[in-house]
Length: 391
Image (cartoon, rainbow, N blue to C red; front, side, top):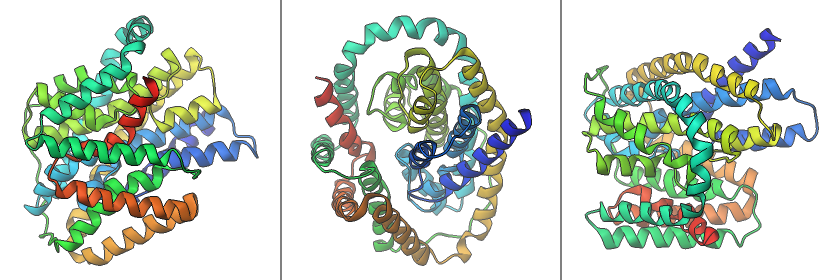
C-alpha cells in the first residue's frame, strides 16, 4: 500500500507541475475530470486523496511561473503580475519566482504552527462567524476599494464584473468559471501585452535577501479569512494584509506566495473541521470522501509536508531554465499559442456558449485593466453574486 501511495504522490506532483505551467489547466478542471471518472470506474479513495493533495500543493508553487513570464495568471496569482513583470523587465524574472517560491515554503511552516490552535478553535468560532459572512464580504470589498487611488474606477470594475458573474448564472454552461476567469485574468492580459509589444530583456539569475517578518505576520493573520468567506481568494487576503501591514514590492511577492499556498493547504483543514470547501481541490476530496476521518487528515498533512520540498525544487529548477532560455522564445508567437490553447480548451469544455463568455469576459478584462485599478477588483464576478446569494 505504501508503494501505491508513493506513486499517487509522485503522479500528483507531475500533474500539479503541468497544470501550473499550462495556462487554463487549473486543478479544479482536473478535479472535475476525476469526479467524472469515479462515476464510471473505481478509484481507491486513499490514493485519490493523496494524488489531489500533492497536485494542488505543487500547483500553488509552479503557477507563479506563467503568471510572471507569460502574464497569464491564475485567479490566485493575479497580484503577482505587476511586481513580477517589473522584475522581469529589469532582467530579474527568476528573482520574482524565487520570492514567491520562498513564500510557498513558509506557508507550510505556518500551517504546522497553527495546526493545533486551528483544530481547537475553528469548530467553535465558525458557527459565530457564519451569519456574518455576507457582511464580512462587504467589509472586504470596501477595504479593497478604499485602498485604490481611483476609487470610482475600482467600484465600477467591481460592479461590471459582478454583473457579468450574475449574468453567467443564467446560462446553462459546463464549467462556467473557466471562460469567465480565463477571459478576465488571462486572455485580456495576454492581448494587452501583445498590443504594447512587450520586449523581455535577457534574464539574469539573482536572489534577494529581505526580511520576511511583515509578509509572515500578514499571512498568518489574514489567510484564514479565505477559509470562512466564499468568493474571497488569496488575492483579496493579500490586499487586506498589505493594507494593514505594508510590504515592499519584493515582500509582497513573498506574501502572495505564502497566502496562495496557505489558503490551499488550509482548505483541507477547513474541510475536515467544518465540512466546508473553499477550493476546487477540497471540493473534489469532499465528493470522493464525504466524511473525512482523523486518519485522512493525517494522510493529507503528511502528503503536504512531503510534497513541499519537491515542489519547491521543481519550481526553482524550472524558473532557472526558463529564465536562461526565455529570450530565445518568440514572445508574440508564444502569446498567440497560449491564446489558442485557452480558446480550444474553452470550446472543448464549455462549448460555443463558453466562447461567447470568454469573448465578453476578455473585453471586460481589457476595459477593467484600462481603468488602472488593482485586478483583484475583477473578483467582483464571484464576490457580488456570493453576497447577493447569502443575503
